[in-house]
Image (spheres, one colour):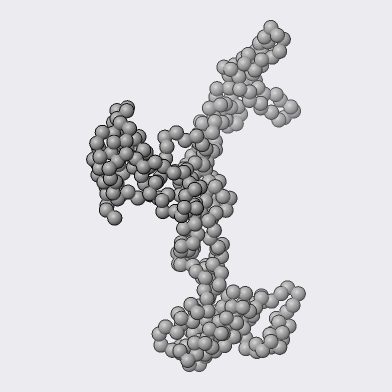
Length: 365
């Protein structure tokens, strides 16, 4: 496939014998006066031919459910890939609309990340993956033979003590205990040497330990005195053993800002956070509350009392006819003061300025 779109003798609508070469991987802008054929070249020629060829790759049964586009009036077009067109008129305009949602590319990107992405721990930065007996055995069998011990942990229930759990394990055939504390017992599954002859035995021990240890197993390297030199922890779940952080299985909704699962907890997927600009509400922080630190509380009682109400001839109080020299109207009840801010035609200017929504960009955007 060529690295450019080559158009020969395009004569769709008002295009007159146009020959053009458009390189791939470049941002190309088509400019011109009104009626020069910009939309004809972009939509009726390039996009129409790319979409037509893309639809032809489907089976005849699938093509009957897709919109068929006529072949544009052009002698030849080479090197054109499947095309996506975003029209200038977008009838659906919401705060969550993006180029990805309009072109439905988000659906494919979410699926791509859910199926092919690699997980890295947010604590230590190491790769997190599900461990299997075959993967664990292959890691330990690669290299010179070593003495190892396979173990699994058993949690002691609250209504049992450690001796009762050890007796139960002994009746199951597990008589060797590696370590014990107040809440767990580390049980020895097997001790062996990592040789090719013991591959089957090693994998079987790992399978049993993962089953009895609820998806967790420990592999310890031993010296000649059978003392533990180093230990490695493995899990069949998406969990970072050194950090103890457990992760959920990735789903397509985990990568969608329109889903509660994948949306940012701060902005809920909008990308902006609406809050109060305290610099406007508290322009002078050196003042006290009584001295007028809060801008909306600066109206004095004398000015609030001088507020006049005008009643129209119909006898009903009209909201647009309210007049007040103060932004809020205050009423005192004992030692507490209740403030009621009313938006009037000429009043409450300061209040609307302070409490207006001032969106700030979220850190996730």
